[in-house]
Length: 122
Image 1 (cartoon, rainbow, N blue to C red):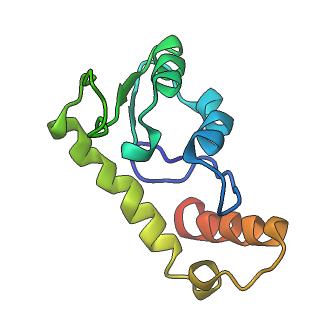
Image 2: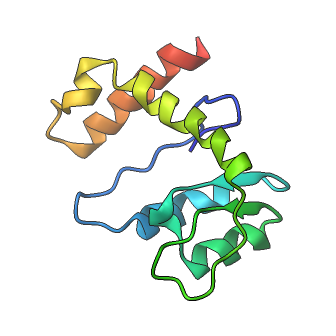
């Protein structure tokens, strides 16, 4: 999760076989009120949309092709999502993060938080 300037706010590490919905549920309580939440098609579920709307934010998530009823989506606002992709690209400039040398998830998450602190907050 990042703010509108591309600075990371929170990370949640999940296993490779875990759905995006599980990781999103851990981070949704941190969504600021009265904002816009950008997500990719992997986060297109009614449950995530209801949770974001209940917090007073607008979910701007492109609908999946298999949806019968297409939700409201703005391609113009979605262009702001590249800020999130650039944030992850900048973190992957650290070789330790890009190749995941750490076997232990706790150590990898700590390395990712340290890299984010060095890149964005110092």
